[in-house]
Amino acid sequence: MTTTRRKFLKSSALFGAGLLLPWKAAQRASAAIPGGTLDPLLVPKFQMPMFIPPAMPRSQMFPARTGVGIDYYEIAAAQFRQQILPRPLPATITWGYGSVNHPASFCSPSYTIEATVNKPVRVKWINRLVDASGNYLRPLVPVDPTLHWANPPGPVDSTPSFGATPGPYTGPVPMVVHLHGAHVAPHSDGYPEAWYLPNARNIPAGYFTKGSHFDQIDPSNRIPGTAVYEYRNDQRAGTLWYHDHTMGMTRCNVYAGLQGMYVLRGGASDLKAGVLPGGAFEIPLAIADRSFNDDGSLFYPSSRAFFDGFTGPFIPDSDMPPIWNAEFFGNMMLVNGRAWPVLRVEPRRYRFRILNACNSRFLILKFSHPRLTFWQIGTEGGFLPAPVQLPQLLVGKAERADVIVDFTGLPAGTEIVLQNIGPDEPYGGGVPDVDFAASDPMTTGQVMKFVVGSRRGVDWTVPPNELALPAITPLGAPTRVRQLSINEMDSGVLAGVGPLRGMLGTFNQDGTPNPLMWEDPVTENPVLGETEMWELHNFTADAHPIHVHQVQFQVVNREPMGGVPRDPESWETGFKDTVVSYPGEITRLKARFDIPGLYVWHCHILEHEDNDMMRPIVVA
Image 1 (cartoon, rainbow, N blue to C red):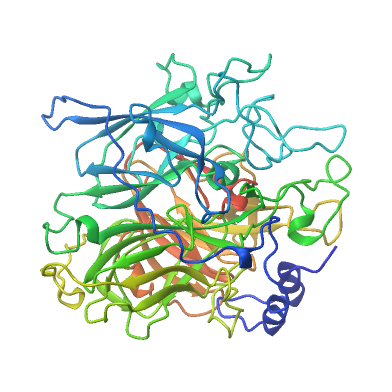
Image 2: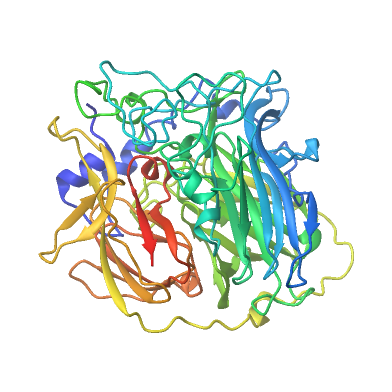
């Protein structure tokens, strides 16, 4: 097996957020990122105008006893062709969500659900991953059936056993939708074992059509292939996103395109209209990396060998999954579903709601123009206490950054490239081109282009350095401190081979981790209404974006193991639902659990989440 970055780190016993690894830089400089048969250097950049997803059309509005009303949507997941690559390159078969009442609304990323604080949204989520004849569609990318996963052939929600090494799963596709960042009851949270198959004509005999927790989550549903969720929206205004959350194949369904933005506005935690850029000057930027084949199809690895060269033995002759890759880094950058797009802007202020929609990649964004900076005003849980000016912007997987960018004064015709100087490999912290090699400047180091035009009208918005943002009420003192661990496991039967899987767990009093699998007994069981401090001890060589369902939490501090605590970063001082946990450190967060029921917490590197780096939470 070839030596991987992770093996190098482990064998060197190097831990910490700021590692100097010249070996890594030398390795990256030698070759472009591998991928499909389409060479990213042959794809023209900045040819396609950037797509801005419109608002998802409602199906209707229901009256409510409160007098507020409920916005009702019927949204399906479906397959279609989309021009992701610039013409004359072919269109790509992809998946996405859309309104069943508006056939033209299907795209990936999907239209933005616009919601209002304290006004509920009800969605009938429909699995329509079927062809024109009503027969089920196969997965768009390879699914490893040896993981603990949804497993429609059965036994349900399991790690199956095999007499011979299996190929990828090719049956009907399960789905379940999670609204990431929502303060929501458990039946509408998108629990990974509450998946359901499409109502296809040809579901094989003996297949499970629903996950083990579907009836517990939605017991009154009698319509095959659907689930009805309701989002309370009783939280701070902010930027959320929705995506598939199926047990053991989230990485596959999200990579295939099942994701979209959800913007919550209004209430005391928002600003009055006109203070910030709005309308055409408020734009979501969902940034993702992908690889493609010459025919325009998505490329995703079909063998473990793509990750580290390991060619077996696989299950059942060892414990190593044959297809799962520990991470995946695409060699092209997409924004709002188009490769390296261009956006024409006026010389005025813009508000960008940035989402890191990659599977594994951390982003470090900066502008090619020396005058431009990011004024970050919010994160996942709404506005920060005050704006923060940043020359570059770190956005971990699934994190959101609400920023103001001021193009005022730039001459018409000015061209600015949004660059990515994060690594083309797992991120461990540190400084680009010092502690790690920045992304390939010819491909993944470029994200999109802005071209400045002339201004039409007056910009009456408030300059970011003068903004007064809504006050934040901090959480109270915790009633319990919970010590947890982040772990990476090697093979149990092949010496020195790994990683086999990632695992979360508890933390022993002797300072050692206690890794736990998904099916192990629940250990995170907060008391209803109490505030807890979670201490995340990261025993791996990489940074992990940790997401906790139900809550928006506050980052308390970070502490190198055996070192001195340091305050959160300036852009982490509001409320968040995802936090970066650095290697060799303890990351502390504080959360109040105020809805009873079953939830999860997990790493949001999707390849990690899908192979056991997720644990249940029971609030009671």
